[in-house]
Image (tube, rainbow, N blue to C red):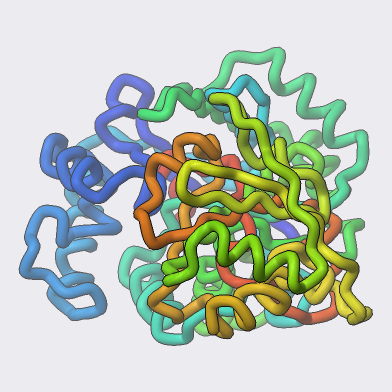
Length: 403
């Protein structure tokens, strides 16, 4: 891997809460709009200027001009600190109690295009194009992408030393997650950390496929190959990630008994699930699915896949092929109007209360990073909404600038 120190802008601690924010998909849009309108310093104004002017259309010159104006205002306010040629350490104390930490460095865009930074999701070219333009006009990127790999123990040892010192930044978000950042400018430690990452032969995208693709394109278009510049990435040991599933919620004319009969006709045995308020994806065994509707929940075990491909052995893929097509005539879960998705960090009981009368819900055991790696290694794409991976970072907490 080719990795580098990066140039960054960090908010000053005394105004950090006015600047940073969880992004789209992490907070409801109406709350994000309120945050953007409340503070002149909010970074949301830069990434979503339509929150201030609803007439702006994403991808238009007026949209990009507004982003630049808000960014210039923030930079001229004196509330950002410029830090050059550094690497960073990030740790999130998750509201559930887990410590989620990793190193923030620059990763060469050529490594993505050459397949060393491996993906498991498709990207949409039009969305890529908009992000490339946004990075270009701002000459910056406002949030690290999340990459993962099995990392050497030496990185953990150095992280432990860093964590003994006071953080540069500390802020708690609306979900009660504590975000902390350390800046490492010691050249010896930088060289040691970067050397370990250079020894890796690959990294895997955990979150941020479009940003990886867009920033890689930008760097090569703007600076050429072998420029010594990289896109900002938070790289974590794969065992330290929180990987959660998504609920799949299907609209159907089948009631509970009819669907139960369908499963029995397929030779699939069902077992009633006794719920409590804490029942969630961790209650679902590997190679099993929780199904619920009409106030009832049950578990059924999936058969083994006959395919040798890693993607076909995923619980989600087996369920889509074995059940969603024959029972619900759903063959394209990415676009079918009769299926919707919900993050898997709600309890099953909460989701049952959330269901409509004509819907059946499905919940899977979460994928492992080993499964994700196997899919990426074979060049396959996981079914849509297969994983919800944390930590989720704050927009505007660490802004990479390209000089």
